[in-house]
Image (cartoon, rainbow, N blue to C red):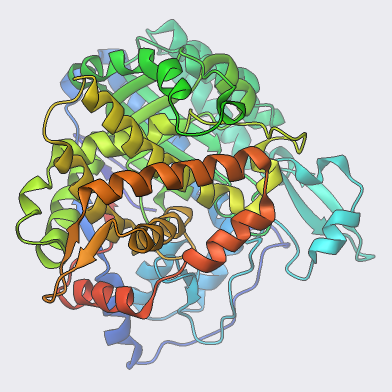
Length: 542
């Protein structure tokens, strides 16, 4: 467990004894020859200290902050179990301190920035279902399993002594841990000056005890005036690459930047109009997005669990529940300090190596901020339910849903930037947004195929290449063809929205198979970045 330094220091200790169902690591001893290789792996990350101005908080909010961080820190233990199994047994089998650090970064023995390749000798491939399912369970066996709770976001699948499958809810599996989290959230709620935050914390505390998160999700959407915020619970399904059904525990503790948030707030009113204007047939945009959405900027002061594993999130679009999205929309949280870290320490150095020298002037933080912001806005557009009675898009596309949804958000985000720029709502040259978008592909594709965001960028790079959206110079740099990129953007938007609306699992699988890859030529370019010691992502001092 690490410590957070904002203005204070907080050290959190807890027992890490895991359930017997956890995976067992292979006993191994690190020898000296692994030292250099592990140093190379660690160099893929650059450290960045998370800070924020606490003077914007009230006295009670400052008292709440360490309580919320304490609650958030509990998500690390829960995600360790979900992603791997027995953390302590794995760490106890390793003698090299650098390897231990890399294990902590990855929440397990697989390199998240290298397609989940194992980096511990004797360790096999990461199970697609992580630790949510028995490692020997087949998809056919799952399909034949009749328990209605099997597809719940909040259950594990296990075997009994007879070898038959059964489900166990999160709140039972993590009974002791979730009770501690609930108590901390209730303790914080007693200090909350903001009624919306107070209500959310109370409902979220109860949700941890029974896995019923809808009421607290709705309450989180209703919060409008709070400065201090926490996103906490089992949320994203990226870790489950077998079915994309199981949610992983994570947490962010956040402080709102009200100055920036006021600048962003008016964009939400454009959502219905932007939905109507999407470049796709009417049937695929019939759902009207909720306009009770927030678009705000925050400083993040603590990450834990899923969002802290491997590549780090710089913007949030939640809740994921389709019922909440259609009723109230979503909240888009731009993590300004985390975003600045990735722009300064990663994107700008990448552009110096891979972007045409005459176009580097178009790479700006404002464009990076806008592209990232409208990526999150775009999650709320398109369609949540298939048009042919296949259920929700998420269920119809199964484990392929996350990568395609990230692809949709990326490409529609650029489309929204273009539309708002035409309306005069965004300043600057459109070339800023498009060139920065291109440079960002190189940043995100380095997350690898194990990341939904990485896979989405592979698809987009290959699609853009096929459509001539960029050319490669003799010196190895890339030059954007702005007109062809604009056309490629429209074509890819159409393709993704129709695949989602049709619930076309086979079509998405084919797209991922054909374009969700890194070609040898692109790999050589990415190797240039590694040789130049440009980090892939960040580790937060917290």
